[in-house]
Image (cartoon, rainbow over the protein chains, first blue to last red):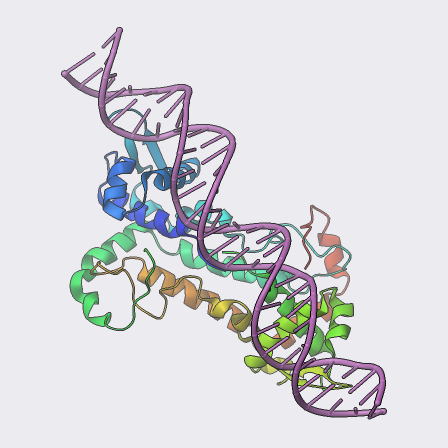
Length: 152
Length: 152
DNA sequence: TATAAATCATACCAAAAAAGTAGGGTATTT
DNA sequence: AAATACCCTACTTTTTTGGTATGATTTATA
């Protein structure tokens, strides 16, 4: 039950695209902004493109941009294609427990799945962009304790 | 973002213990009921014991039983010790993003964490036991499509 | 029309995590 | 004393994740 870097990085990348709407941004620009490698960014963008979140333009001057306004994209829409559709267990849509009449935990995982999706779909990309602009330095005071030491 | 087998198996084991309260059940009995290996069950029970969910008795006639009535145990309490405390990302309690003033996704993961926990803490083990008894065969009709083919 | 800048596609590799095993030790009952 | 059963540590195997590498295709521009 760990979020993959694809989802974490992917969301950060979408935030950057959302801050600079209506223009194509290349993978090398994204790499400079985020510190991720170009190749890994390509992989992430490929998933986001298939999902219809971003559109790409090839050739010189090309790159990626959001295919819709950030206010019309939920975080769930971004994270699902990067996180195997958030199917944290195999038997979600399909039924399970071969040999058993009734799977007692089926409903549990169903509710959890719905809960996760409803949290993520309740936030739009634009809201997170606005937050990060409004917060500015204000948050800095509150981060004085230990820090995680992984790449965000 | 996959649930581990430890959590899945662990919940199923707790259901079995909850159905037979007030007596000690050995790992070999659990193995017969579930099909999991004794050694792996031992590992799971060890985590649950540390978390105070079950208590153990050693020696002949020993085994495991729930340390509280199933109605007083939430699913979150069972799953957290088996799933690395449900910390799906490293920077949840602690602050993150070294070198950045403000982590724009901090709040996102915080809300998701709260959502996951609140879903799981809203269900008691007893409720799931009751469900599985009430449902009985009724559920069987609804499972006609494809099935997941992993061990539940 | 060449050249450079870019995405696209496929395959591969290495590190980490998950899943499960092995072997022996210790406590308890009979 | 013998059998049962948990406890503890370490190990191995498998799967997933987190990338890389190579090269092809598309597009703008000089």
